Length: 339
Ligand code: SAM
Ligand code: SF4
Image (cartoon, rainbow, N blue to C red; front, side, top):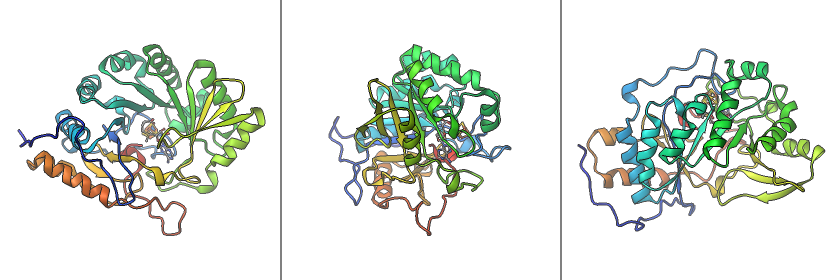
């Protein structure tokens, strides 16, 4: 059993603040680097060298780190991701344990297996899901993800809605010449089914290093496409949320755009990330990490882990350099960081 030290009284934590005054309250936890899809903008057809099981944090380790994050560092929201987080065995049990710690918990998933698990996840305390779906056309889905699974995703979305994992958000990465002709269709599909559509600019975080800026559909282009059919009213941003939102006039349909590349939101970033193998990252694009797993397994007490966490945040830079000539793509791809 790892040594413990006394926790501060409930609510008495010192905020997790960086040199620029950004207070970090959102923790993204990757539960596995493995995936059952092979999205072309994310990883190669053959997959990646998955982490050996022994290197992946176990449930007790995840729970301990989240406890430290919530009780000592003031983390209030938790997003579980991957790889594909639904591949994690015993996920409802882990979520139930995390729920007891008090943060709001959401999940980013490709939706495969969600039809089977949505009810249990909700019962365990999960609040919301984001489901990735880049196209409504089965053949195109199979081409983008290299797996013929669109029916599972659509069933997963419906099950999430039925289970009350609301709002159910649909994430799509529009890529020029691949699915950019479906932007309006995706919005209509989401509106029809009571989901909330969000488009994410493609980022240089693929494992192959093949990101091509000219293939990215920018936020400006997206808004132009939407404006061809609808009048849009800005809803703005919720707190530090990465998505800028627009409401379609005369409806309650809201569309979100996450423009990480062309409209970076680093100035309001409140996120910190934990990889499946226990490495803490202060940015999606960070090129360095802090090894919390080593501390955990080496018997460090909570105060020492808290200090390592605060040091990592203290080293956080002002923002990413995607748009600079000096940009260096991190060694870990998105799927191994936790998107
Ligand atoms: N497997 C889950 C999924 O697909 O939702 C969770 C992990 S995935 C890495 C998280 C999100 O990152 C997905 O919405 C996916 O579309 C997005 N993503 C993956 N690679 C990306 C890239 N190169 N640029 C932008 N978004 C990307
Ligand atoms: Fe898997 Fe998500 Fe990457 Fe697609 S985007 S390959 S579903 S991790």
